[in-house]
Image 1 (cartoon, rainbow, N blue to C red):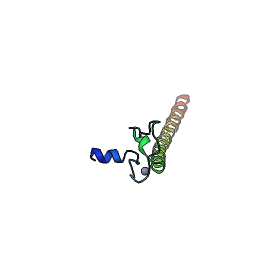
Image 2 (image 1 turned 135 degrees about the vertical axis):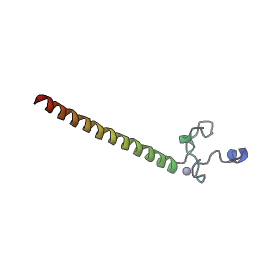
Image 3 (image 1 turned 90 degrees about the vertical axis):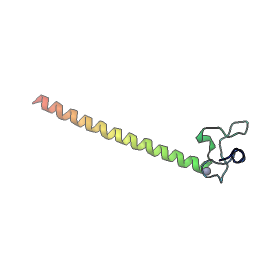
Image 4 (image 1 turned 120 degrees about the vertical axis):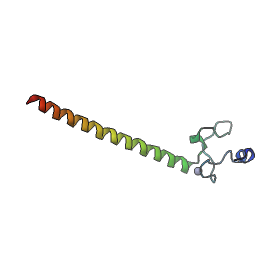
Length: 81
Ligand SMILES: [Zn+2]
């Protein structure tokens, strides 16, 4: 992307380039980080995606913890015999 085009698109969402980016500094400039260059719809989509990733990770951790607990219970029973 050329510099002049980038300047013209400064306030547009950096994902769909069709809606205004919502999040700006008080000076009216879109901040450099990705989260602040998106319109509401694209930002919500991003948030849902990352939330889904976190939920999947938590579910995996819970499953793992259950497996560890089950293995520990089995080992304890073996010891008590
Ligand atoms: Zn957008």
